[in-house]
Figure 1 (cartoon, helix red, strand yellow):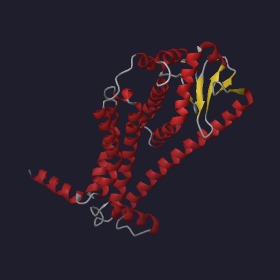
Figure 2: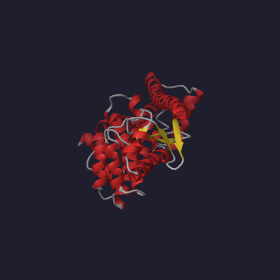
Figure 3: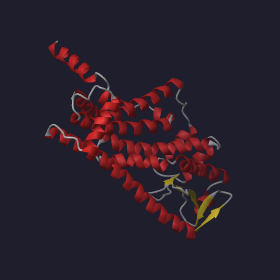
Figure 4: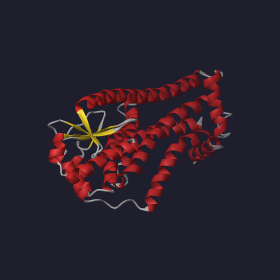
Length: 316
């Protein structure tokens, strides 16, 4: 039972405090790929803690502390074979875990299905009114508004309007299309869908709300960095300035947008990348966030250890 309490408390504390901790300093701008991993791991950790807390409350006490394999075996037995539960509280806990897992699964699937439908409709429109430019490796769309975006998916493609081609220099066109290709190769739409699923499943909770906006911002920084490996940062910055007011479909990833001017400053004044130790610390945090809830749920002797020390503290 102690493991259930610890996990439940952690889930509550994580949802409230992790957004403030993760937004301290400028480390995320220096390592956007790592920052995305940390944000999604934090969301997963909070949800997993809530689920494991419910399972730990429902699983018989004799199983807790005998190892992770035994813990999962008992959980699976209750779900698949309908093993009897000892109390109404245990039944409620198990039902809560199932509801949380089902909620996040449903929201994730709904986001992916709707985005796929919208992309398919837009792709059909592009096939009719757009034309593929083999030299640019992009679809050129006749439009009076300068915009560049990509349409993710199995047959992902970059799209650029004729107004953007007129307003951008060739070097800037190549740089901004490299940004969009980075989105496509990195499958950044899946990262956005994951963050969106957490936010939609648990609306109003600080961690998930902030994670959604941060991941959306960080994938743009990451695509900028990938493009900057082969193209001048000045060309990327200049293209972002010209495309700042351009609008992309909500289901696509655009080069402009509200963060464009901030990204321009970042391109022109790049910060030093994270050091080796800082990256190791970040990766360790990701592993701890992902593995921690399961370990706490079934680590041998955790319940008796915490109970013993909590008892001593209360006596003192």
